[in-house]
Length: 551
Image (cartoon, rainbow, N blue to C red; front, side, top):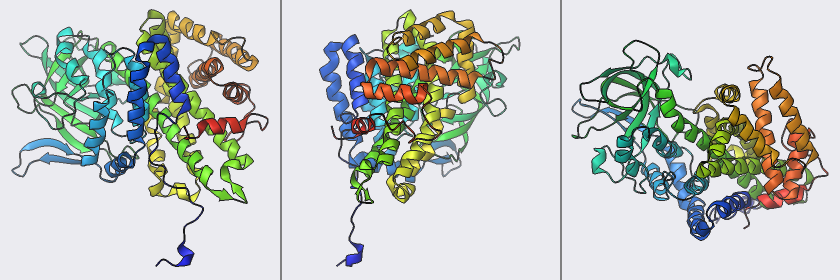
């Protein structure tokens, strides 16, 4: 019998067995809003699929899979027992279960389904809360489709496999699999984000479109994928014009392509996912798109993965918020539950505000992909890098604050929040870090007038609804009109663009107390340097209530 001093009281129960989708009001309302406008006939079916995925993501089983996949990181096997080079990465079975569930839920299938991007984005948001690391190959597989469409023959061969709802692990010829996964290799050790400095060389073969690659990739995530899109120098004149190539792991005759995995990265977080350094030495590849137009060819993939970075960070924000609110609901201190304490309520309301703004923005971008109009494509050209910059930047401080809400309980591994905190900086670095995103927005502003017009038209839809938003829009226009030192001010400009865009969306669509709090704090300047510094006169209780998981 346990000693009486060991009786457990005043502890929050495990947060399991809830519907991650159904209990997230901002997500649920956003999906229904965009779907009602674009494809109302799908409402019933999409609700059902997202509720099913939400219940799976909130289950004890999925949480256990996530823990096991991170406690048992992938291991590299360069050679078999006889000394043959095999370059295989072994994953824990939990990784395969997570990945299989993601593929089965259609999280690589957006480009050909009605409202495919919205429903896929919502599903990615939900299932990422089960475990984030396996989202990397899911994201790259989804994002490879627009790049491959630069070559209709390749697209016809690979797209049905990329968008399949069947996950088959193991390296085999693609033609013998019901579904495949894709990765991407852009950066090299001497250049990093400056892909123009890449030195990997492509030598043409006699067959049209076929090449042999020699070189390396410094970061190659998910090296057990079936194929990879990479950049290499192919122009015979020696010009620094990169070309995009498809590199399969297994050739059609069943032999392994030359794909030497040198080592796996020992990363801060993202432990379940393998990120590798790989060498090419006579590696067979197929050209994708025109020679010398590789960056233009692969940019569609990059844009899609950048949106997934914003979605993934927004999902982590929601996951951290859920844990904080759940703990505060069940933990008492100084004679009252934490959630009833005024200062804790301010912290939780501030976290809820940040989470809802990120969720609303990410869904708006997904809906723009579905619309596919010239206006929406121009809007995405600025909005995606701006959202990727800001939402991913906000993730780490928010997760850290949510962890602090649990005190010492949040600092121990069993809570899951340390893993979430280690994961939180990832999306700000992947697919171009903060400076890359900010400079990309500047390039769009300078070279693509339609993009700025589309952005301003979007935020202008909320003009006149809140004086603080109107003032922020005016201030942004002043910033954009001043070109002096614009590159050094790029982060400041892009931050303001993201905040104005979030504010305009919340003013149009969120409950009045949410929009009021956002405009007062993020746009009106009535906010401190840390979470929990909202004006006390706001409807903080309403914000916290909206964030609770009780459906």
